[in-house]
Image 1 (cartoon, rainbow, N blue to C red):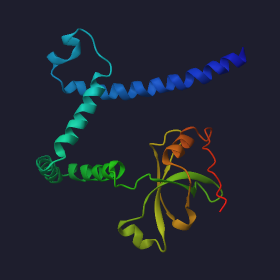
Image 2: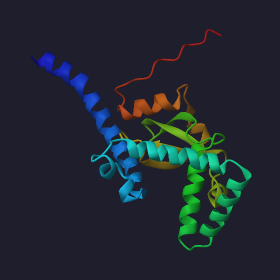
Image 3: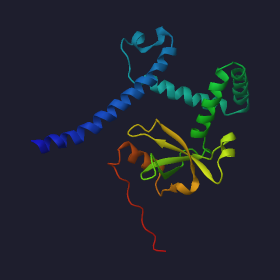
Image 4: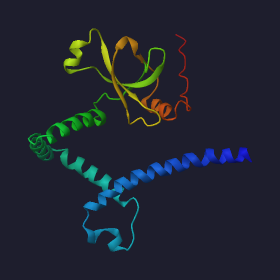
Length: 202
C-alpha cells in the first residue's frame, strides 16, 4: 500500500501544484475585468463568471499597447507620458528604477540572466548557481580593483527572491547550462539534476 500511495503522490502533487500556480496567475490576470464597466461584465450579461476571461483581456491589452506604441505616433505619446512621470517627486525615481529593470529583463537586446554561473556562496567552501547580470557600475566600480562582475543568487525554491552580489570575475565559473535548466535545478532544490553535457574529444 505504501508503494501505491507514494506513486499516487508522485503523480498528483505536480498536477496539484501546477493547477495551484495557474489558478493564482489566472486569478491575478482576471482582475483586469475591474476596468470593464459593471453592466458589461459577464455576471451581468450572462449571469455567471467566465474564469480566464480577464487573463485574455490582459493579454489583449498588452498586445494592443505594444502594437499602438510601435510607431512614431505611439512613441511620441509614450515619451510625453514618461516626461510627465519624471516631473512627479517619488514617482519619478520609482518609475525610472522599475523601467530600467524591465527594459533589461524583457528587451531582446538585454543581457540579464543570459548565463548561469557557479559562485562561492554563502562561504568559500561551498558553491551555488547564480546568474550573470552585468558588471558593477557607478561609484562602486571605482572601489573594486581588477575585473568584477555582478551576479544574482536566487533562493530555493522561490527564485524570484535572492541576493545581488559583486564578485571577482576569476571566482565566477561559467556553466555549460541554459538559464531554464539552471532555474529548474534551483527550484527542485537539486533533485532534478541537469543532463551532463557531452565531453569534447578535442
